[in-house]
Length: 148
Image (cartoon, rainbow, N blue to C red; front, side):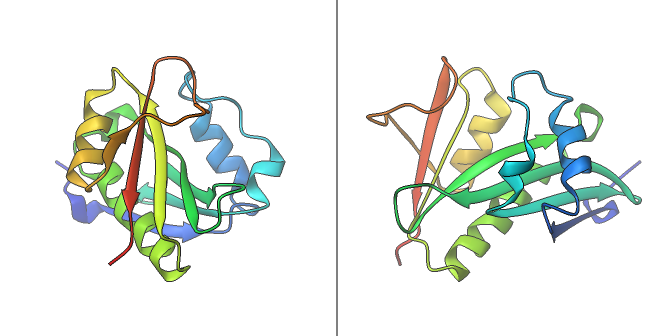
């Protein structure tokens, strides 16, 4: 039986690990394909289980809004659900955003993804209705202020 201690989450260089991240991204048909250009800006994390990659997450600047970070994807392989990986990756990305001096995070997920919605709520995000929706139809949008 695995425990949370069996998982390692590390921030990685997106360009160096782009193949691994793109392979994980392709396991979920909801996500659009990641292109090489997506790895030129921003920050990426990989979670591994006993040395094998099982999850990834990204954080990029939300252009053109200064000081706003966009949580670009988070995927956890189905057989590794239930170990808090998504919540831990939310926390890692928030720490990075604060270190960068960013004041807000935004994200979206499928409106029918109860686990993702619960994790956003646990992490202190609030549901919002952006003026210009950037996600796929049926997306739920989230925001969190990082101001102290």
